[in-house]
Image (cartoon, rainbow, N blue to C red; front, side, top):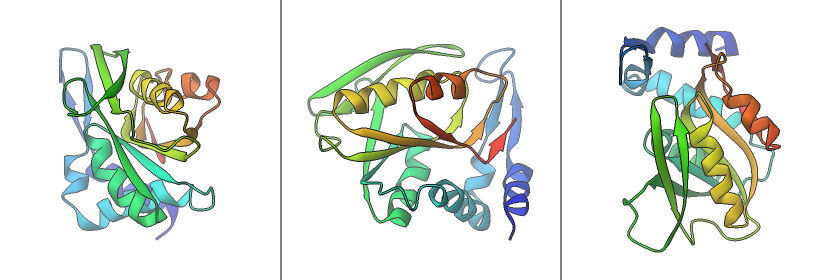
Length: 179
């Protein structure tokens, strides 16, 4: 299947949910993609393929949909997996970052041993919008002394500043689907 066919398959399953989580937001629901074996497998392959030759030591999945893609991508790349969660969800010592969302604010945390200093990490999430979540995750990984090799998202909302924010931080951005 060509890249265009892969992207078309995934796009055909992403549904728009208007006014969620608040009026004026059009939520990109990836649930139907996860329910389709071929589409889900394609998502994992697309997120992994761009980073197969970049010596990734650990994939970091961002709560919660980043967990769904991050684990399989780590298996595909033959590397370790770590997570970043919303504040209050991790039981051990953490570092944290508060950031702005397109519809509010939130705080992310990582265990202090999520990465080994010097590890090369790939950050995975389902969607890149304003860049707040991704920027906070990059900052957490850098605080923990990891080298952020890149970020991968299934979907990018290209009309929002997420890519520019990450590129200003010197971080590679990959997203096969851009709206």
